[in-house]
Length: 296
Image 1 (cartoon, one colour):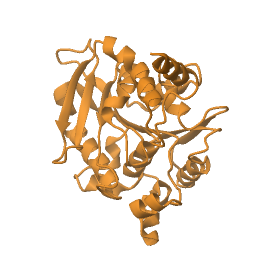
Image 2 (cartoon, rainbow, N blue to C red):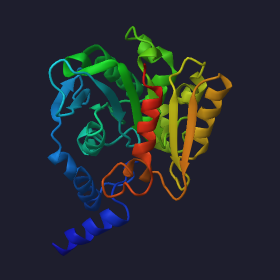
Image 3 (cartoon, rainbow, N blue to C red):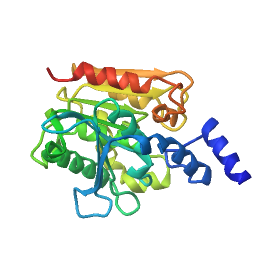
Image 4 (spheres, rainbow, N blue to C red):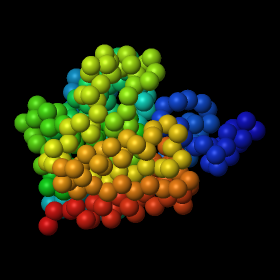
């Protein structure tokens, strides 16, 4: 019991969650449990484990605000979690759904296949396939397909950015980038070079590295983007967001980079947890952005 209390205290005050997929400890699990507690009291309707493919990980959960009924439609947010392309699950991110369903959004949390079972570009292909399923089916769950947003953290931001920049992913589903009204990336590695054996195996050989960089596909047709990064991030360098921002600006696109002083890699998404919301105005910045790019 003492050990559990120490872990809980540590989780709530030092490092609740290592979403970058670096560790997996009892303290982390307790922190995740704490982050998701409010979701258990949310009146959102939940439809779990909808298959968008044949794999066990090609499934998604849909969270629908409790007040929506009849013919009412709500904006849709599809959120991809991080985990170094090799860990994490949608079940750990109920706090994302809790935050945004309370703001009137339908929230979709997809799982996707992970390394070492698959390698790049399978992760991004799954992200595109999940988004295509949402676009083609979410109206049956009160979703407004004309009001669709994409977001992600860390590896999830990387995947979401790829399908928001490289038109080939959605084109395979007879869709275009026009279906995305806006993209929000939290601490995304949009333009990095693999520098660890597992990453080299995951994304290699080296001649394929350009295919993994979202900044390489910017051509001016991309949806508006909000890039959020912590200035104390020691896992994903700020230059990733800067390179994507600069590429979009060169093509005349709509992009804003927001940085938070004293915030690290985990805390950008951690600020969406109830006990870390004071750290940075991530939720407010995302909502302002969504309202700005919302179609008339």
